Image (tube, rainbow, N blue to C red):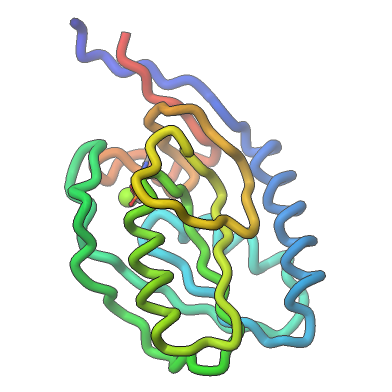
Length: 176
Ligand code: IMP
Ligand code: MG
């Protein structure tokens, strides 16, 4: 088998922009006047977060957390060890977690459990992409951009071994 990786566009920047606009409209309707705290999961969500919040024209706050677990390559180790970097107290806040992709669900599930213990006023999840074929624990996605096939994606924040995050479109990496 050749190890050549053939990138193919799955979602163009225009399609991503349209999806982010749709999500922003839904989020605006639900959170206007609630001064939500949006918590992005690093590193993958940084580009999505930046585009999303520019479309949210009302008071909100932004945090980022890092979850240590996902090693190199394509497979999650399945163990999320800790949440790093959450500086704002979330008790009584309307918290919206922003994620690039929900794959096995272990990462997001762990973070949602962790945040729920701090007693936020509400806790929801917004994911740009969802790969339901690989789910190992169920996670409710309240705002979803795209459901995607069981392929490895890169671009628009998503990486393979830290590469390709800067691509403005989303690609599928396929071995040929
Ligand atoms: P989960 O814990 O398996 O749901 O995976 C969570 C993390 O794995 C995501 O935040 C991504 O950083 C990474 N991940 C999962 N699938 C992909 C993919 O197709 N491309 C790039 N990163 C991925
Ligand atoms: Mg990653």
